[in-house]
Length: 94
Image (cartoon, rainbow, N blue to C red; front, side, top):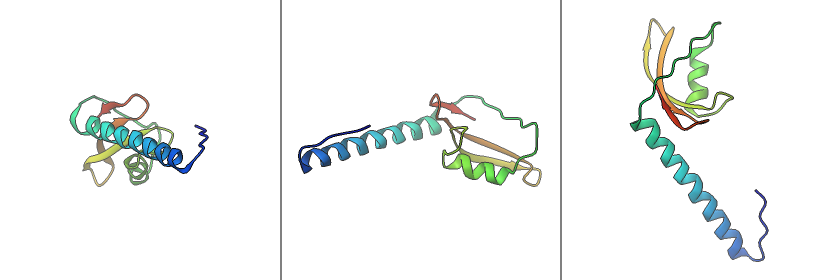
């Protein structure tokens, strides 16, 4: 988005409006992540580094656009379960 402002008040108002919009989106995503349910399963055809995967999805970064939290670990860290939000659709996944 490109904005043009004539004075500092317009610049500050634009910054505040953008910040509020992002804050509302984060609150909505957090609410979806924590309260709604949806089934989703990833079965990788090749081995992956589950710790690295956990770090990527816990921050909502990466091409998968998943914002997840780890909920369970089993079998000496060879199986992990997550829940969170699909940032493509804002659907709740677990």
